Length: 92
View 1 (cartoon, rainbow, N blue to C red):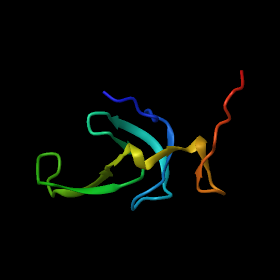
View 2 (cartoon, rainbow, N blue to C red):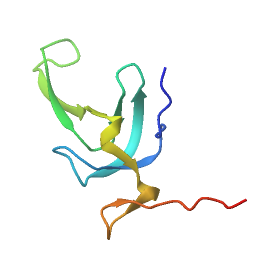
View 3 (cartoon, rainbow, N blue to C red):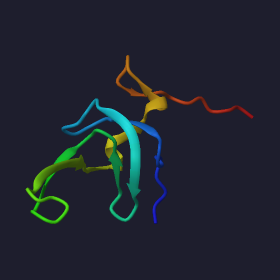
View 4 (cartoon, helix red, strand yellow):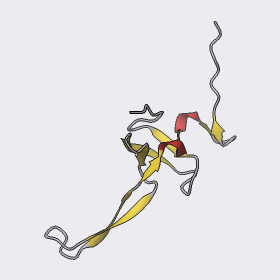
């Protein structure tokens, strides 16, 4: 298992791909696939068949997953430079 730079409930921003610039809260992290589900980003449509609960059927919209390499923590993002803030190393 890998260790990721993001965790559930972190505020993140998408830094590359078709959803670049969008931000949201991490709902779920999928370590086996190296992906994360972010609230309000990468919305996909799922077609549901008729059933007892859905007598007419419907098209439900839910969040899809995004690869973690395309995400950055909101606290590290510098909007003026469009990149991560550099952290200063502590001198001994």
